[in-house]
Image (cartoon, rainbow, N blue to C red; front, side, top):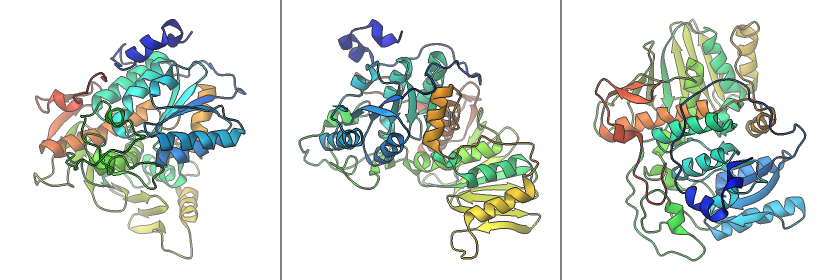
Length: 442
């Protein structure tokens, strides 16, 4: 029986506002017994219906799910999502809510998709996990380090399946790049360089007149309540991706936005999915927006700068990869190269060339996913961990948060990736979490 069956709706909505920690941190790689019949239709609810979620909704609708409910604090986005679902099914059965807890309490919803601003990831995610629901949540998985640790605990304690929306792992160029590195094609890796944007900024946006149809207090949620800004939350069915992600109260800047993608691939290539760096070195300039480094136990450094995307430097070559771009250099010779402008080849052709040369009899083979949503749906049925499980998503997010804290405080510090705490008297435990606005808490 799910936990929600034992408490009243009123008490549930009250209790779900505070999602406190519970249970030991256990991170097994076991398979869980199937709880969903292999041929059954998975009932889903969607929380946050902005630009990213519109794409995800279409992807899930095409995968044989039964979308039962959508949720958004903006009336226009909420109603638009309901119309799309109803049109798909030829009825008017899809429910539309402004409060995510209405989705969480429904016993007919097996899984939720969360594509809210980052500051609203952890609270509905933890509530869903504890209510016995599987979760697909956008990256970065959490807004701070403590939230990431609580998600790790909740997935294990409740035996749930979680997929992080770090979909680069479901693209061949990234997987093959990491397999080349993991199989020693470029020798011993000494350094990784990742290119992505700036750390988060304190929000100083001017207040604008609010329009009807938006629950602004709920949009702010656990973050500080401030005057409405269309920069943070454009009204209606907006195009593009709103700039809330630039501000540390709601997102984590380019470090958390694109960094969550590229640091994730770096962790994969280094074999660090279950671990992470042991030290963070601050940039030389107090006001720098590039230059901070992550340092791993074997001495490998990961540099935040501007460049190709993700570049692995070994003592015998270099593997460089980004979306639709792929370059491999071994012993000074270019083995494969596609930088997006060549007319006589393609990224796919160059990836296959490198595979044929070096990976035919590879000892290390990485998880193969050709579609991120399909991989999640398959794992919901099989109870296996998906390609970007909670372990992957949480630890990639932690890398982002560690870099941001170094920029925010111009600090270098030690880190214990097993205990999730600063070492050697460095850092400040306050950096691991945030102040939550009541009634919300983690």
